[in-house]
Image (tube, rainbow, N blue to C red; front, side, top):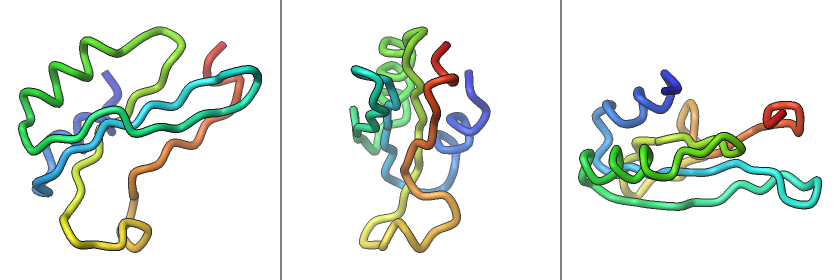
Length: 84
């Protein structure tokens, strides 16, 4: 389990977002997979969808906020080597 994913699950923000990073045809793809206010549903989805070749992150985010203005907004940065 990625510690940062746990931070996103357990922070004070009400909305939880799961983002996946993966390689597809030598291109990096970042996508939103699941959104909920229910921490248990988020955790269950995270565990059920965590695969070897994927990188999942859980973010806790506030409502009505420009997410690029907060310290670490929902995004995934990765290189091809991260999946090898």
